[in-house]
Length: 293
Image 1 (tube, rainbow, N blue to C red):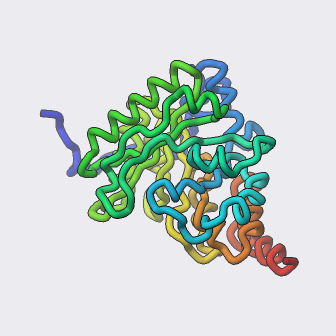
Image 2: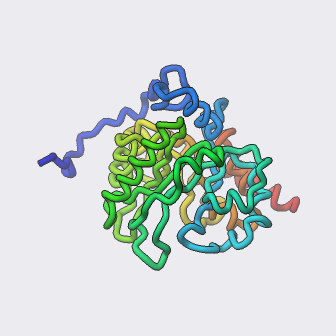
């Protein structure tokens, strides 16, 4: 039986030693094919190595979430200010102008609604359709510790295999059920499993203690999930801390489209991620744009 080192505390993640990227700006991507590196370069800005993703895929299991009732009215105008948009193929085809020149990260899992067990997902998009939509990455949830953990892992490996055939990277999103503890130990496990099995990007939650060990022990880029709606200054602080502790970007949804000034928030998050503004500076910047209307 494999040993589970839950009681061993002597760990060294070498958080002070940067990972060698071997000539390509993203860690873990140096051996990938040209097409996959090119797609990753659309998502992550080569000049900063970071990304601001705009997550609007909530409707695939939540329906018309607050702020996403009319994405054509409230959401599309914000898209030019993100590096990448994370969404479903239904919203992409019905709502997003084809002239939008932003990276598309396509939600490819689905099945249960919020009325059912969320880990009971299946793959919901064929790779050929992802190619038709010219996506830069494909993504799905992985439910480490969930009731249908193994199925979600198999979904991920199938998606990774399909993506590798056509040079499309896969982003694994570490989902957290209501009975799971959100701490660094859990996210180290979930992120490492995802990367070990082939995901080229991992999206996970920020935790205030030892987040840098999650990043250090994951051999591919970590993108911080925005999570629940927070006051703007708290969301900017969380983003800043995640970037300072090694994250390669943020994927904000509710903390942007549920803000009382979504465009100002989007611009402030960009300043944090790509220009290194600290939380006070970013909130002052946000407030000035909000005041200007």
